[in-house]
Length: 77
Image (cartoon, rainbow, N blue to C red; front, side, top):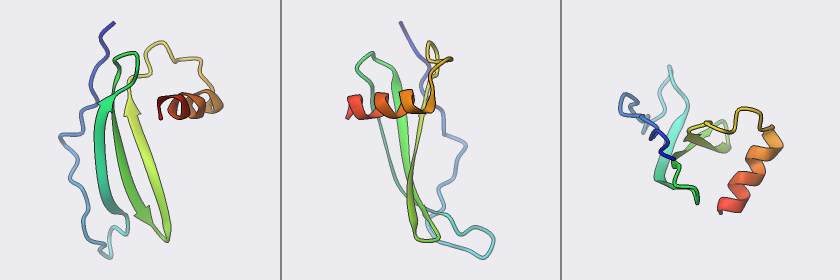
């Protein structure tokens, strides 16, 4: 099964905080889950909190809970 690759080509990372945008983009990574599904992970910081956002196709995951997604990411390492 082929899954679409996340397209973030229109996103411009914010590498310096400004009065209009205090989110700082720290980095990103792209890869594939065990089922061949491509993903993109972006790391960002705001107000002393560091977060990770994962982008990937939700195909066949439509009914998955938040806990199920967390378990998926843990299994994938």
